[in-house]
Length: 363
Ligand SMILES: *[C@@H]1O[C@H](CO)[C@@H](O)[C@H](O)[C@H]1NC(C)=O
Ligand SMILES: *[C@@H]1O[C@H](CO)[C@@H](O)[C@H](O)[C@H]1NC(C)=O
Image 1 (tube, rainbow, N blue to C red):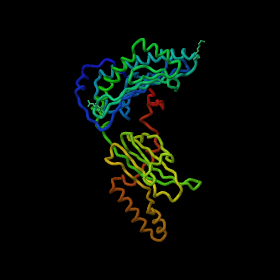
Image 2: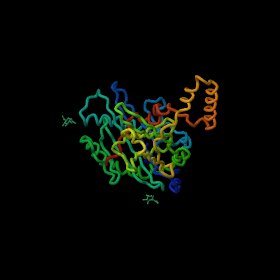
Image 3: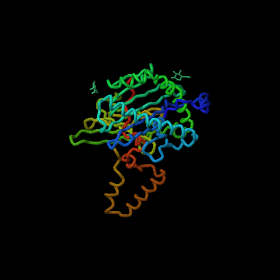
Image 4: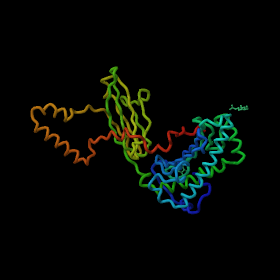
């Protein structure tokens, strides 16, 4: 949550000179939801440093406290939790009022369920200095108002938002936002990066595989699948004869693997027989150079051979199976130990967002 008051203890961070490989960000996603049964609205907030959730608050939780969601948060002192909890409880109250106000701007009845979403945060350059700030609101899933991070003025995206804009301008809210986004937010981001550096500043290179799939109409596609990488930022490109193929390429969104790393794939369609003209290029912070991979037809599996021979020589089966087990052991259980569970597992790191992540700031 936004601590407008900078505690003195933080000043030392000002002189802490961080040098990090990439840009970093701290973001909060808050959601306030009115209820059909006219109970108090639910207020829910989650904080992220880069792709790692680190705090959350839920007004419907028993404790009604800001809670840590990352191990490195045990390095912050008790004052932090008190302050964050107080601010979150206050925010819950003000969203309660906010939901009422917006309901009246839109002439909506008291009985509907409505949602305010709020996203804000800051980004820093690799040298640690402020890069950008952003803040925006949505109402019932539509963009409502956003802060122009250069002029620090509010842009009413929805016509009803002029009401909010007027109120906030009267109360000079955007000056506080500027101070928060450019200073407080950056200070805390530095502090979190320092506390959680083992996790936040690590880079895990992607493991990449290319597989071939054929469709019912005889079309063929090659899929380039990257797994196990961190941070989430990655670029997968299919090239044909060295030329980028954007049009025929299908991507999925980068998604959490459930173990703190990320996964993504890109597939390209082609006529059969063209496979060797294609290569997949992978760029990621953890790779010194881009990877380039092609589809390689698999050698006949050991099990096919076993199957053919089994009827004749049962002994061979045992030897081959033994060899396979040995090979797995020798490679530390990793080689060939493809784990489909990670692919199918429900995401855990976005659960807090309830799928409410908003689009990037548009002003
Ligand atoms: C709400 O009602 C008022 C008065 O009837 C009207 O002027 C206004 O345009 C209405 N707003 C919306 C969003 O329908
Ligand atoms: C940090 O890096 C950015 C972008 O590379 C640059 O504009 C800025 O001047 C740098 N700041 C400092 C304090 O070196």
